[in-house]
Amino acid sequence: MSGAGARRGVRAAFGRWRAGRPFWGGLLLALGGAEILLTEKASLKVVMHIGMQGLAGYLLPAMMLLCGLLTLFSPAQRLFYSIVGVLCSLGTWVTSNLGGFFIGLLLGLVGSCLAFGWLPDQEPRRVSRQRRREARAAKAVRV
Image (cartoon, rainbow, N blue to C red; front, side, top):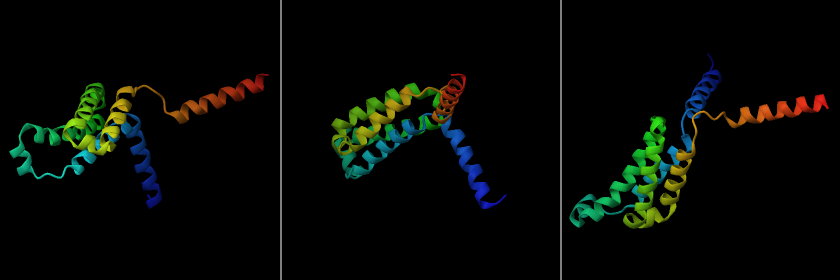
């Protein structure tokens, strides 16, 4: 198999994998958690000295990151992970630099909402568009 054929095969396999899970929701939730973790500047010594409030600043974004990854790799429990993800995202408003300067907070909220609203039995957009075109063409031929 040539290099281009192998890339197409890998791309098709990734597309099938991605279609079976709330990919964008999990990805945005994980990116939101990672962004908030990267905006934290205090060292772990300082966090442990400050106490529970400082620890929550790292714990909530880590939970967001974990929920995003679990949504990607275990889509059957997406409802639970998305609810935990939205609660952690809202909690970062208080504990983590206003939710990573609003960016991580918004990424987490949008990703959680996308994961919550994803339905596993929906057909891809291109398939539904193609069916609509075929129906219009058949209707035009009949008229």
